[in-house]
Image 1 (cartoon, rainbow, N blue to C red):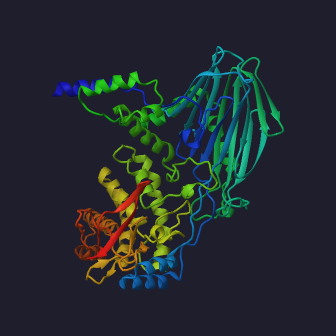
Image 2 (spheres, rainbow, N blue to C red):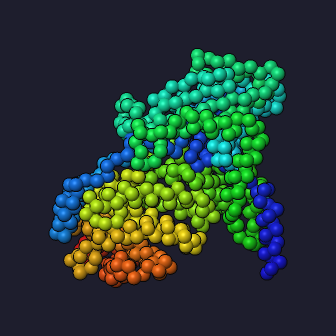
Image 3 (cartoon, helix red, strand yellow):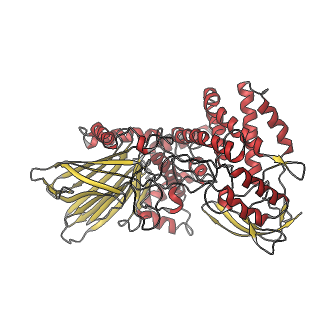
Length: 625
């Protein structure tokens, strides 16, 4: 037994660098989702890999529309009372309609930084042997292709230690690198070339979310990006074109660096009051790497990235099958990842499962690091002014899903932005709880943004009337403690947030008609049901959904356990929780052995539904018990 473990461990150590973990493409990207993502937590790019023309689509995690908001509504308590009365009367359709009085306005929108454009002078020559690879071992995207007898190579990575995107363009023959270089953005901006080696793009985000074809008022968060050029070759030359572009001819190689910064200075600071100068910050970041070679920058990048990524590798099995899988992967390394995915149904390539797992770890490392913003709905990568769902963090499962891998996948540092953001939500959420719900503690809902929006979203009730977003996030605090057993973290960070969350939940629970403590109004996120006695009309608002009660029970249990560790078990809150727990509704199993989601209801017949991004959109025939 011990000998078998030793052999497996020895194979793992020897094969760590040999086993490829590459996302492989056979052609340039045609769509945004075909491009290869790179990032350092805050700064990111999508590498398209075109031959005659290429671009790196750039992102910075602090570029959002808007300003700090007021997430309170003095009219909400009256609306809440009306909704509760309708629910008590069994008028679920009317309660769903009346819940519009609880809506709290739209969220703001994540914005793209811009593009670094590369136009190559290839004189319509044909190219061959194209390959584009994202190497997860090195967090590097490499593009190679041949034109005639010349092999061209582009290598891209995004360094966290130096906060810079690095691109090296080279060829295996001297004087064969020629291109035109430029920056642009969909946001209000201007570009100026400082000298033959540097250009700066500066601009600003809209102060409010835009609608289709609306002009930008451009008085929100400001930004700046700096692009620096270095090249080599006896015949190399560079020319400035119209103070907007740089034309490089006959270089042996070209090294490009991009840094960026914004005026965002926290969720409570209006951009107009920010003392941060984006251009100065971007230039300071550039100066960190200006005198370093490509090899020095890459070595620093690898030391940082691999220190996280190589902490754990998925071991598929400690059995003879491992060697078979490894040989299979090596044999199929020339296949593109798309081909491997398409062939998975007929040939279960286990190494593809490992690639998928490690790709998820790579993305989290690339979009969430200490000091950055949280991973939004698309990480940090977005090309649109009006992205789907605003690219905003959705708290009814998406944000939680982004961060579930941090602890079991040994990426604890990557969770720090989430912990910081929960604290920001608690600040605004305290005001929302007090004014909107006349409750203590703090609350937040289904969707938020960089300004830590805590009020309900301005949308259909099945999305917005869900004050459990903060509570579900707080489960990450207790789980974080359970992994690290850091009592200082529990005392100073986790418990104050858990306590505030539980204070709200104890006030939110009300005496119901069944003599139990109920949540009213209550929704199951993005679910709807056919309300009983309504003539088959859909509703989404009732009381005590199983999801509500499950989250509340988990938070209450975490507070009790935390209080025992910290010696706080005799506080009024803990005593109130202990009294409340046995009075929460119990889970109910329907006749078809499914879990009943809505209080006082059971499934009648087969549920009809579909899944989308992790949520069940169900329309189910309901009946009263």
